[in-house]
Image 1 (tube, rainbow, N blue to C red):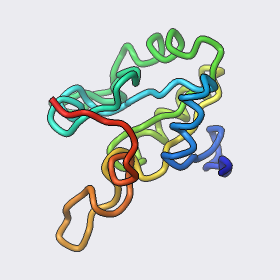
Image 2: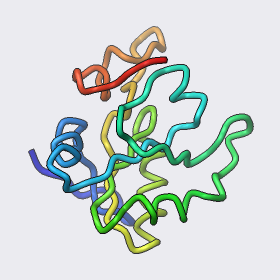
Image 3: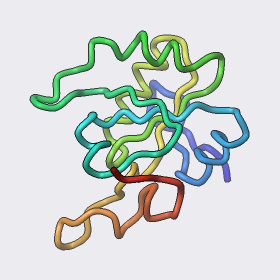
Image 4: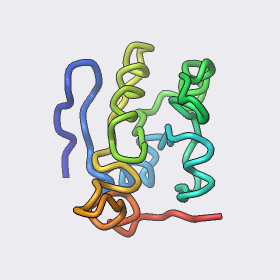
Length: 135
């Protein structure tokens, strides 16, 4: 598995499996950029650093994002996880602007919606059987 180039402005896109491999090997830090509410209600990855890109309600940008990702990086690359792989691109771009090596995790935590607009059955961190918990 290899990272593939992303859109301009960040290091690239990685599969959930490659992101987990990097985290396990100590190469990368997993940053969960979903809101606190999403992690609480839908589930979370144990050991991931929770740094919301936007916060519920209103989905306002997290004013503490920059400082939190800089502190979490510790010289390692960052792999960004959101619900579907959209906010994580924006977060990876911002982290890159801060001088960090940041990647987007494709498919996100829940994957794409199916024909009935339900997530979880078409890709994503959970779908691939990677570690996660729910409160």
